[in-house]
Figure 1 (tube, helix red, strand yellow):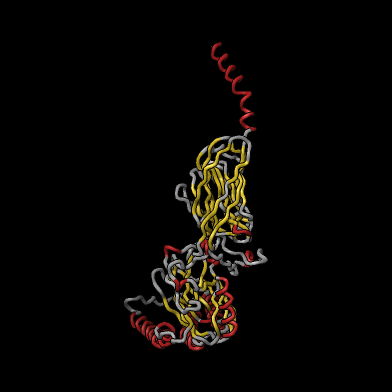
Figure 2 (cartoon, rainbow over the protein chains, first blue to last red):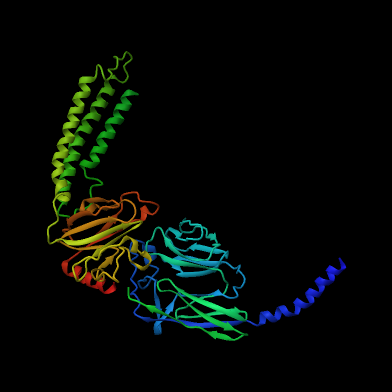
Amino acid sequence: MMRGIAAMLAGLLVVAPSTPRVKTLAGSVTGTITFTGTPPKMKPIDMAKEPSCAKEHATPVETETVVTGPNNTLQFVVIYVSAGDMGTAATQTVKFDQHGCQYLPHVQAMHTGQPLEITNSDQTSHNIHPLPSKNPEWNKSQPPGAAPIQTKYDNAEFIPVKCNVHPWMHGYFAVLGTSHFAISGTDGSYTITGLPPGKYTLTAWQEKFGTQTQDITISGSETAKANFVFKATPY
Amino acid sequence: MGKLFAAIVAAIALVSAGVFVARIWWLPPDISTLGPAIDRQIVETMVATGVLFVLAQLALAWFVWGTGDEKNRRPIKRFPGGATPLVVIACTIVGIEIITLTLIGSKVWARIFLEPAPPEALHVDVQAGQFAFYFRYAGADGKFGTPHPDKIDEGSGNFFGLDPASDTAARDDIVSAELVVPVNRPVLLTLHAKDVSHSFFVPQLRLQQDFVPGLDIPLHFTATQVAKTEIVCTQLCGLGHYNMKTYLEVKSQADFDQWLKDQAAQQ
């Protein structure tokens, strides 16, 4: 008994001072996602049949399969750690809104098991229908003012999301087995922080152009650089 | 009590017939070359059935008025048996009426569904799916790309499953969420359903035709006025059926050409 307690105390003495030092040593990776070639032309979405949504948009919205920015940058690319330290599951709720008959954001990334809250801020009914292959499938109606849908996904996969009422509505849930992920912004840039030292494989996923990987090494608290270039085709 | 019932029966018959005679809640304006023939058929049907309806209801009211309160009622005649001649006469009259209406009406029906569209007709490919209509025009080459159901990807706007990468005819196809047609020019629609049965209903064109999965259904019309009106689905097709609608816009030939040009630039 006494020996057991002594061993535990000794263990604490060894572990306790080392824990904060590991936390302080966290690097990050940043980069820009670009494309070469000609990307497909995005098509305008006609929402005339849903006037409450049409009036939400001053300029006509377009499909978001390939969203490009200045200097051939790509938005809505998910960059995540596919090998290496996977981090710990995040507990904060991830939000996904239906607004102006569009999904906001177009692509939402989350850790497996992370709470997901789906809201409808439109004045019309939606019927959200994610199409998973490794998770249970469901579709749920959300009239205007309905309570948010609270859910989560336990298996990692990229899940296309559609609306059963409005055929043009389209998005993705990127359910990942890591908490180290980011989505490229309007300028195509991304940053993943909090990477403990070690070797990593980064994967970049774009819904039309597929995936690319890159290996990086984080040795301390530095910021590594990893750019990805996708090859675009017009069709 | 019998007299009150008789009065109510007569009143309902006369008021409901009066609504049609006075043309309260009448048909919406007709903007189609086929409209007058269909409207004439509708009026003939309404007159034939309406006269019988009013006479039958008034006769019922008259009998109830005279005999409804009798204490010593005559025995009721039953069918088959005592009432057989009466029932046979009634069935014959109604049968002749229905067959006559069918024969007369089949001429109008044939003009819509059996006669082919004129060769100069504008071809528009129509796809109905839960819960929207999409319309496809052939583009500059005058040819439609081949649709591939497995390539349908609504999120990227590929509602017809076109394959522009390998099918050059599909590259200039123009897809619109509204049906826009030129005035006074025949239009030939080809209706396909992506998933379940839907219906193409435009009251102002006097046209209603189901979409049936697996069938390509031709439907032709000529609009006679510049107008904008609703196209609605009238087959209960699922949860969003109530919201399945779009618009028919009839434009002058010049406006239509400009519209098509603007659409082509957006594809």
